[in-house]
Length: 368
Image (cartoon, rainbow, N blue to C red; front, side):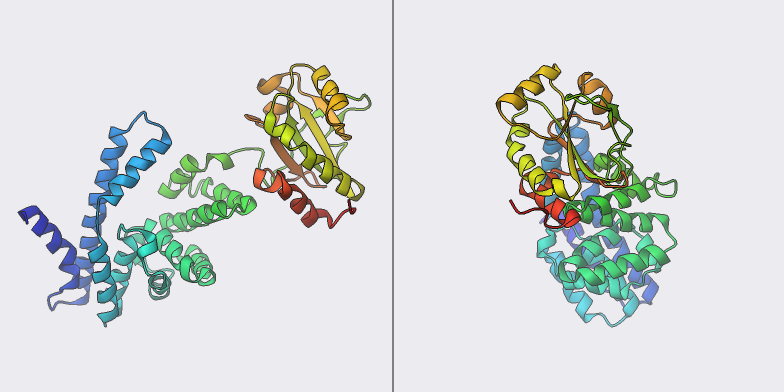
């Protein structure tokens, strides 16, 4: 074994073989080893980011994952777990728990119960969280695997009691990531909006949120008012507008005759309309075709679509498509009776999920 490898092993094991010294010195040893280990991994990631500049995001992520996987801290993780169990000094044990949370190993190999213990033993206002604020997010994520209720309680307490804005920000980022993964868009949007306020925008978690979760930086989002629109209907009559639809639950569906996924949704839309129209549900289909005649011919020859229709003659560059930030089709947006956007996700508004969403809002509707 080379000198560098021997030195590396000694550095990693240093916090586990303490000399008889006071608590503060022992804690400093643990945190120093944590920092050295973390810095090696972060330096490898920085090198990967520089070497992969210009590649696709997925390629860069694979390279980052490979770089992280090249570090094998399995033995050190086991040693830390044993040291935590053997440690009788509560303050030193807190540092060991933080180091366990920080170690760069596959999360599935970690003991989630130690995540819960970390949150229990390191108080919500403890300055130790400020040593590396991002570790509060890791601790919460690990604890969630064992007890999501206690993790949520701890997250709330840390956010309310800790003075460090970076620590608070990582609690919000944890909430954003978990809500997004669970497809709870409304909740995710609230976390994102908080991270974009003046207090958090320039923090590290605020910048991460702005870079990774840009989809929430939009006017067309859950909880926001529906944008203004007023369009002449294809079938004639008064303008169709936000005001004319006030009081109804309605789906704005941007579509085109050339959009195959849009056509696949037609049976779903017809079934939903037939079932819920009597309960105050409406559909407004916005044609993105080259001319209104295309939509009229489609309705005459293929699907009747017996609801409201308008034609967005400005294509993707203007009109309703610009107001609703339409970049691809189909684009569904569900609006509530008060003009507030209820849902925008395909997970809520396409296929069988559309009827499930409407059932939650309007009840069972009319039996088919």
